[in-house]
Every structure is written in C-alpha cells, then in structure tokens.
Length: 443
Length: 130
Image 1 (cartoon, rainbow over the protein chains, first blue to last red):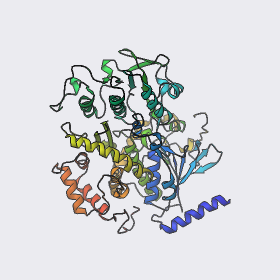
Image 2: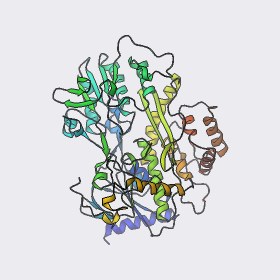
Image 3: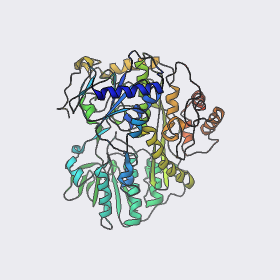
Image 4: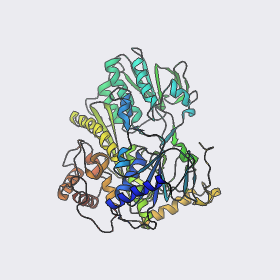
C-alpha cells in the first residue's frame, strides 16, 4: 500500500467514526463507482453517502468544473454569463467525502467488475452507475457537423463555447435579421427548451433589435407546454396561435393583423429540416429554403457515447433498465440513469435524472445489504419561461404501474386562465428552482 | 470511443449475446414480475422528490420555497390535502399533490416532522438505512 492509498483509508476511517455505520453490508465497505458527474451522477453520489456513510463512492468525471445545462439559454440573452453556469465539486468532496477521479473511463470488465482509466489504472466496483447524458448527432443533418457547430452554426445544447457563440452571434445580428432555431425530433433533452430559447431571443430582440425575426422550425407538430408557451408568445411577441391550439385559450388572446416577431413552423407546414448550407447561412426544409443571419441547430440525440461503447444501449441507442433499480437489462451490477436511460413516461430532464439518482442510490444500498429494493416513485418539473417575468411549467409525479414508470393522473400544466400574478410567480420560482436544484444535486 | 474500449463483458451478460435483442421483450416480462413482487414504498425516496425545489431534507436555503424540515405533520398533511382539493390556490403544488395518495402524504409528513429545521434526524429508527 503506498502512502496516498493509506492516507485515503485513514481519511475514510475518520469519516466512519464521525458517522457510525448504519447498514451491515456483506462486504466491509462496498465501493460504488459513478461514471459522469452531471446531475444524475452527482445526485446519486450525494444521496448514497447521505443515506449511508459506510459506503465508498468514487465519481469518474472528465471535467473539474461542471457547466450546468439547465437554464443555460439565459446566457444567450445575457441574463447571466457563462461563469454563472459553473458548479464545483467541492461540497461533494468535502462535505460528503466522495472521491473524484478526473479522468476518462476507457474500458470495463463486467466480470471482474473493474473500470479501466485513460491514465492506465483500474478501479474495482461493487456497483457501477453510468450517467453519461446525451450525445448530439450533428451528422444526422446533411451539411452539419461538430466542426461546423464549433465554428459557424452552434448548437449549444450541451453548454460551452457554443452557448457563448450564440450570444455573440445574436449581438452581432444586423437590425431586422432572422434568428433561426431548429428544434430536434423526440426523444431529446429538455422538452420545452428550444421554445423557451426562442422566447428569450425574442425578448432580447424587443429591446436591442426590434425589427428582427425569430423563427423556430420543428420536425414535430406539438411540444411539451405548447399551449402555455404559445399564449405567452401571443401576449408578448404578436404570435398568432394556430387553430389546433386554441381550445381552452382565455378571452384576451388576440389575432394580430401583422405577424409578430416570433414564428413557429411545425412539421405539417414543412418545418422538418433536410439540410444545412453553413456557408450561405441557409437551411432547406420540407417546406422550402430559409435564409437566416443566425442559425441554431438542436440536432437529434442518443445516449452519451460511453453508454454505447460499453454496450449498454439497445437498437434505439438508449439504455434499457430495470424500473425499480435502474440496473441495466444487459449487464449485471451496472446501473444507467438520466437522459441515457429508457424511463418510459419520464422526460429527459435534469429533474428526472435527480429523482432517478435518488431511487438508484437507495436501490443500490438495499441490493448491497441483501435487502429487496422497495417500490420507488419519481417526480419531474420542467419550469419554462416565455419572458423573464412570465413563467409556467409541466409537473408530474411518477409511480410504477404494471412494471412501467407511469405518470399519475391529474393536471400537468399551469392553467391557461392563470393570472398575471401566477405567471410572475412562475418566473420567480423558475429562478429559485435553478438555485435550489443545483444545491440538491451538488451541495 | 468504441475503438478505445477493451471489452471483456461476456461473463457479465444477463442473457447470451446472440439472444440479446431478440430476447428483449422476454427479459422485460421477467423484469416486470420481479418489480411487482415488491410493495414496500420507499418513503424517504418519495420525500426526497420534494428536494429539487424545497432543498435536501426540506432545508430550503435562501430560496423562495417553503422549508419542510421540522414542519409539524398536521400542517404538512392539511396543506397537501388543501392543495389536492384545490381549496388552497397554487401555481404548481396542486398538480404535485394530486400525484400522491393520502397514505403517501401522511408518510412524508412524518418524515419531515422527524427532522430538525437543519435537516438532521430527531429520532433514529432502528434498521432504517435512511
């Protein structure tokens, strides 16, 4: 045993003394290894250690600083900066005693239960949790690629340089220019996200580029929170609500004689993208060609690369799992959570990954102690805004029914006759949620 | 990425590789049976679904959401039932409350009542890993 290993053990011994062991495991101190330090991985790590101090948890993560994707569109309209998206792992390390290895996993031996790291070392696990997020499939759109996304036509769906680039391009857009958002096909991360992004860009343009146009083209004919969003667009950006979405709309809905700043083109009206000409800033859709000054493409997506490399994905490129434990249906002792998992009715969202992480943490503790895992429940809330002071949501509780993760019956959206005060409160809660949620995952 | 992976997974497979996808529905059926045998709800996990807004263990920090840690159980139960019956107006909580049974609500009420306002357990239940 070298000195470093020894120090590590000494540290753990101290922690064990401070927090007496609560569970008798078959093995003295089982080791749970988590690949991916995003929302799902961080929450699992934190709740494992919170629920049982007699467990060793190691997170393998590429980046020392996490850049949160939820709320990251607010960089584009300069409501916040890239710096505001940064989250450290300090609390998970210092407050919860979680080990971090900042490296990449390059291989796994499911029989020996070891992970190989890029640095050449092996890590043994009793249970492995894979929380890899999504991989963006730039190449699925003719003329688009990761290289073009990094240089000319950003996606910004995984936040980073492309997010900042979108803000810079919006700022540099000529007066009266067009900002085009290409929405992705299902399933994708953050269902209301592309439409909220359109709102934020339109709100920015009202002040800085009032003759600009914001266009969202879509390979779908509806989206999550569509009626709430369209009502906000009607009230704020002169959007005319299509007949198909008029049911239940309040009396103040206007028919605007001149089309407003924001336009949405669904699949049935030719909104599906066919190809991109990045050089000429032109997109070809089923409905014809669209020229724009800024193009923002949210490409189709699948489970994060590592899930595919580990053989955890099925023919649809997402990961089939046991709904009680999130253990892979393909490999024993490996759990997959978050956007990469097939979780039936649960959307691919941070909130979903967070409650899945908690269910998985508890199930792992039960399995390691030889107990049968109990019946889980989950929740999801996606807050969305149509403007800084205009917020709403989709909220669901999920339980197991006939072996599937099933949404519980009841209303899901803020009622369309919500008052201005309720909409304002929705926006206040959205901003507060960004803080409280980050704390629940990372602090 | 695939290139980099040095896979030696065969012994860890749940089903033989050739049957992997053909056998998927069967594997899921078996899985369903296993899931249905377990009927003890994980109350702490249910209560932890509140944490995304109300903070870990119901400690709300500096956010605008109602702190739940240390809330008397009758307050929690009455509030949730009022949300559920729409007798108390809300933005979102009416929706969430409708997803839980009265039993769920009572169990979560006990969970939060047994925590100090700082989120520390007031009583230790033997044999409970939470």
